[in-house]
Image 1 (cartoon, rainbow, N blue to C red):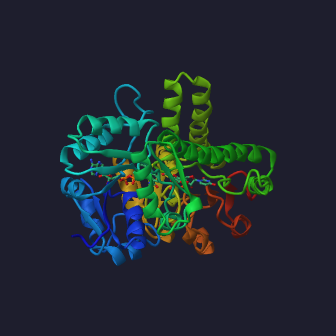
Image 2 (image 1 turned 90 degrees about the vertical axis):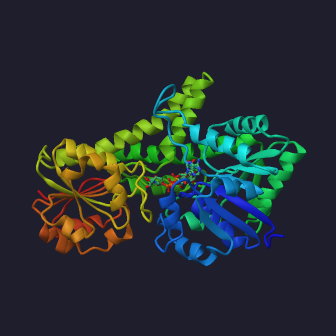
Image 3 (image 1 turned 180 degrees about the vertical axis):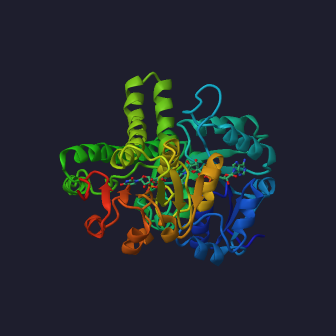
Length: 459
Ligand code: NAD
Ligand code: UGA
């Protein structure tokens, strides 16, 4: 007889699977959590002192629960066989081939997982869709499982994850809500309750929302689309602010104090990044088009177009403010991660900015406290043209311009007098995150170009 009430398996030990299971293991010490992945390097790292992802607070939780009720292995089949509940948290990238390439979700990994669960299981399972998936994927998964059930009962539940990287542990510990979508049948409702039971170890009942499966799947895509839409909205206004001498921070504050609008996600930037916003909006667009809802699709597609435009606009501003040529100029990018407090660079605006700077034949230097290794992977085709330097002071030596790509706190605390003195003159600073003290930098001698505000230049 096991010492644990239930055995929970998580397939996929990534940015979602690892932190989610670590928090559950911390809060539910009477459950066993087994995290599996097909990538042995990732699993080795989860079992080491150097975890494969950087997330504030994660190390402590993993080190506290690992090998007590939290286990990381590559034993997918064994894990499936032993589990009562299976969270599937594998990646769901955009399709790169065939019909829907570049827009639809690539569901081959999902389908393989469903088939493997059916093949290996010897007892009933609750299968939880944790990855973000197109609406009605749970139905497809149910059909595959039922067609191969050999008399077993598989209940598919949707439980999308809303954590944001950099604040993932905090988000998991104090979620605004937990969403569980389940079938309305008695067995579906029992499965829903089993998942709610896990969360109720630390989440108040009123924050555990239950819906039907399709609403749950769609809500995840819509939440990301709405968040990204706010960023594109304020970024579009940032261009208007630059043209009219309005200040985008003042505008964001003025509109954000309206309780109907609210203050969050109104920070103008060089563009949004991250592995999900673009992917999930594309998914929404694809679904809308597949139902013949062209206007809906066009509306949401525009959120991505504005984001692409904002990144190019940032580079164009560099060109026009630096005598219309960047050729041979040393430009240092402060930060490469798609946001602060993560080493993740997936879809980071810094990738596109770097590529456009290289097209202009600039000499690019990249510095970041956590993301240099990932940056090297993203830019593998350009490695001979880029310098990577962990020390921001060294990176800035001899540079013509600095571009702030990530809002790391450390960039707010640097000695900019020292940096200014080591740079070429005129020294330009393009703050793609509006995080530095622009008037202080201007006083030091920099030409400062914020987002959505008038530049501070010397004549
Ligand atoms: P990730 O790429 O970091 O991790 C996915 C892991 O799944 C990888 O380690 C991969 O090796 C593994 N995997 C793939 N196929 C497998 C298989 N058949 N068996 C075992 N392991 C397998 O991805 P992620 O960022 O954790 O995202 C996972 C899902 O969660 C995506 O659908 C994403 O949209 C969603 N999501 C992500 C975030 C986030 O902040 N990253 C937040 C909410 C939701
Ligand atoms: C986002 C959502 O916030 C999560 O709820 C969701 O679970 C997750 O996507 C997902 O599905 O993967 P994440 O991408 O980790 O989380 O980070 P965000 O804080 O949302 O930031 C996304 C991007 O928008 C970053 O590049 C960030 O710098 C940018 N951003 C955000 C702005 O430019 N301005 C803002 O005001 C807010």
